[in-house]
Length: 320
Image (cartoon, rainbow, N blue to C red; front, side):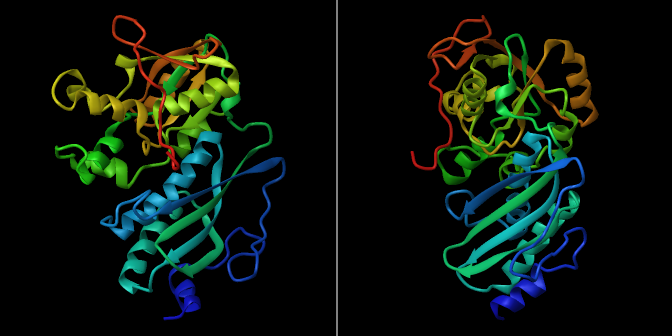
């Protein structure tokens, strides 16, 4: 099978909304009148962003959702995507499974694949995604204000825990649900769109809770205060005592791959946000508040007695 036969068989469909779709040197697209595009791109490298043992169908879904998560954090509705796929060789079974997963995730959000590139080399997937939203409606990191509440759309820590268990850094078994959180995250697209006009700032938790909270704090020139006991997680039992308590706390605060939305909203919108999370059947929660900026302290974490915890702000860093 040649490169072009591969593209035609596994990654080509008839044009839907694009002005010029897959098959030319460039695609041509345009947003609806009064709207703008939010554009994001992410690369997934084998051994860095996913394990070699992952089912390629799950990898296809993962590749789409980690990109759409960035659109969700901006309140954008996904519209188009480009795929760049680097393969060590043409394995038809692997590619068939991968494309099935990719298309299933794209179809869930009515995203049109409008082009991309294939090449030979170490396994890597790069997707560029385009989302549409009304002009001036984008959720950004810089809108948090003192006295806002801090929210997260769902449970944190389970994906990081699963990864540590799978690579042997934690001598324990991850549950099937925890492994699914890591391998096949779900972008909170509908929630992001619903947060337009409600949230004052937003970011997705791809690199760790503390790291993302610090991004909001610095962009907004505020301090973010987090109530440790209020953070929703499947690791609650392991956080209390035992040999894995410290690792569980690290997973909760500093590991990424959760792809939940971390956002701030005015206090008078508390009930509205709570209703929004319930409507989308998410176990999110209010986990803190926004304070006036405290120099050198972008993020504070309080324990159950409301005492400041001695915790270093850290998160995923590709070059650390």
